[in-house]
Amino acid sequence: MSRPRVLFSAKPERWDETRAPLLQAARDAGLPIDLAKDHPPQAVDYIVYAPNGGLQDFTPFTRLKAVLNLWAGVEDVVDNPTLTVPLARMVDPSLTEGMIDYVTAHVLRHHMGLDAHIGRAPGDWDPVPPPLARDRRVTILGLGALGAACAEALAGLNFDVAGWSRTDKTLPGIRAFHGSAGLNQALHDSEISVLLLPHTPATDTLIDATRLAQMPAGAVLINPGRGALIDDAALLSALDAGHLSHATLDTFRTEPLPAHHPFWHHPRVTVTPHIASVSRPESCARVIVENIRRAEHGEPLLHLVDRDAGY
Image 1 (cartoon, rainbow, N blue to C red):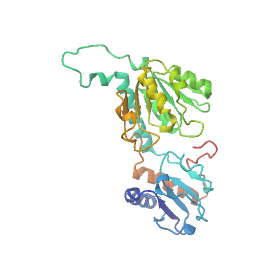
Image 2: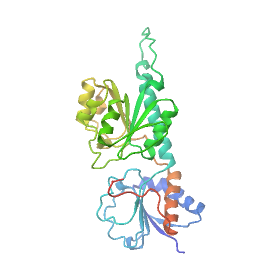
Image 3: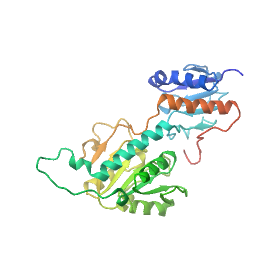
């Protein structure tokens, strides 16, 4: 069997950090690959791809078997009309672990009211304890791989966890909602809501003024999912009115978030620079190589994108 030719199409810094792990993962799998940044298009079997790497026209890749995305999100490539081969998104244990860490940390921060204790003035002694986790209602919007893992982690800490998804799903110990009516109920009951939905036409600006108004007074919104899930102006209005007590945001419609954006300057907003869940080169390399191995042996690919659903 000839070595599959693999084109790496991403920003240069990703090549520097991912090349050696990809080659090592291939050796470990007993699957030598011909990996390069400059294969002639007509010779390429697989593309390891990031949408910000510049490649947009897949037409010249006449023998291409699959595109293997380095990102969990595929909204920037899924509708590309020149991409007609299978597209696999990144589902990686390190992505899941990082998201659990981020979501758990910020849910606990808001649950415990830690901001009030940081920088407290001397003599400001207000010994009011927070409720127990079992009395705090947390809702995860999106019960895919990341959302389900975060819901289970929070339930393991004894939070009262609900989840919402587009279709009906069942997770042990999690109150599950689905559909439009289910979303309204999930938000109505949620003191802390975490957005872990993909960005699709159906979820664009899903959290608008109407949906924000359905959340209980004083609720917190955490968004490590996609920036376009939220109507920014509506969120700022809800914060200004005091209906929401805080928003912790890790993803934005424009990244990096422009310095003039009101989120940077709002006292009830925490901005983090898209750090909640990042692919680590060693673990994502193993996922990519496993999919190449599967394709070469005629086995179904892992984490295939549903083009109709958009993820």
